[in-house]
Image (cartoon, rainbow, N blue to C red; front, side, top):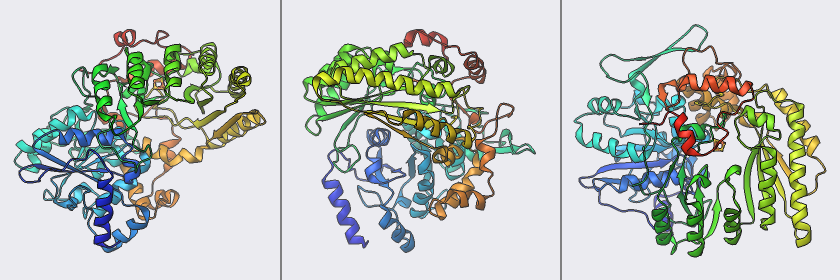
Amino acid sequence: MKTWEHRERTRDMLAREVGHVRKPHGGRLRVALAFPNTYYVGMSSLGFQTVYRLFNDLDNVVCERVFLPPKQELQAQLRAGTPLVTLESQTPVSDFDVFALSVSFEWDYTNVVTLLRLAGLQPRSAQRTARDPLVVIGGAVTFVNPEPLAPFAEVIAAGEGELLIPSLVGAMTECADRDDLLRRLAAERGFYIPSFYDVRYQSDGTIAAFDVKAGTGAPATVKKAAVKSVDRLDPPATSIFTPDTEFGSRFLIEVVRGCANLCRFCWAGYNYLPVRAFPADRILELARQARAHSGKAGLVSIALCDHPEIERILTGLLEMGYSISPASLRLDDLTEPIVRLLRKSGERSITIAPETGSDRLRRVINKTVTNDEILAATDLIFANEIDNLKLYYMIGLPTETESDLVAIRDLTVEMRDIMLKHARPRGRVGRIVGSVNPLIPKPATTYQWLPMEDPAVTDAKGKRLRQLLSGLDNVYFNIKSERHSYYQALLSLGDRRVADAIEAAERNGGQWRAAVAEAGIDAAFYIFRDRSNDAVLPWDIIDGGMKSTFFQNEFAKSLREEWTLPPKRQQENRKLLPVLE
Ligand code: SF4
């Protein structure tokens, strides 16, 4: 694409947006903020939009956006060496003080390398100089296990932007040079400087230690930054509206952060603690302001109904004329008024996550609901004229047997019967759509030491489940094979040596098998090894607030099929949890 065509396309894109920020660069800290995927995907990310707003809320900062060019332009741009420029002012990224990348998904790791190359930067921080922009990588994946990305960043921002962004900007404006800056950041909460640590390995390839380099003053582990209270914070909400995204001009807003249920497989549950509810008045005020640009509200929260004023929020949104779409709803929090309000706002489908079919296996994973409660929630949903139900299940859970697979079928059949009971008299029968994913043991969860299940076993379970579910009218299942998640698991569980494979996959167009071979990485070592005897795990460098002894106890309870906290309310949970200071 020629330069003038590119400029024209950018102008068109900006013209279709409402809410982007233009500021003169003079005298300001300049931040190029990238989402390592296309505009279409990146602009649907509430996290990305929030970081953009948080930077631009500071008067002494100008923050402009960068995305991965569409496929057809990308290769041409790389070949021609056309510099990567920001959307707002068409300034080359290499002219900025900071190149910040907000990374939400493991699959975007290769795009991080592509963006660095497009920006004219060496991918590895060790090969860059202090004249290059400071490369800061943040986002959800990096505060769980940043190690595979560690060699690409000067700074990994671990935690929540509301705290990290003012600290970063403060340090950048006060420090005289790059060395000073990195030392200052290393001393602050939430900033991990990978070059300040030497990773020492045992002869079997496991990590022996992260050795802090002398003179850096870096801490032995980096404490994740999390805001204590959100009482005086604006909730993250869409600040730029554009029709050119996955969700169209939907108004996204975070209602409550965190989930107190502590399901043993769930990294989001463990890593967004403590549970914090944004002020209802502010949520409604922002929604009122956004109403001119959007008629659809997307409520982004992993435990939406944990908000003490959720009914008032839903009622308020409804009165403003919004149609409301919640993310997945936690089963134990579904109440009649909530379902009724959702139906009234036009919702025809609700998503819930039974995770598995048997109460026994749900006790193993600490999903604190029973089949009886799930069936009661199903009745509530269909009685209130919701037509369709989406279900999330997992396979490959610890202690799972054939009878647990049969239980998935049995539970689904009972749910379908409830759907038919309500739907037939109305003369309108909806669908139950199930999605089944193999468990990927995640860092910083109770299952962090577990190997992923043997693919042959998971495939056999998938096949059996397909048989069990075949021929059920109005029920549709998508059962994913383990191969689908294999390399995602590598990126999730890897250490900084996996960076070689990321670079190789970026070069060869995402051929992971060849990339892993080229990098000399043994993927099975990371994915299928029991890590319970490892001295140090790659993600131990980040202290997310949960102690390893807590996870060990949880694992023992998992095998004893014990729930940790039958009462699910956050106040009760709080007494038992290490709340971040
Ligand atoms: S209820 Fe959902 S969000 Fe909460 S811990 Fe369990 S899986 Fe995670």
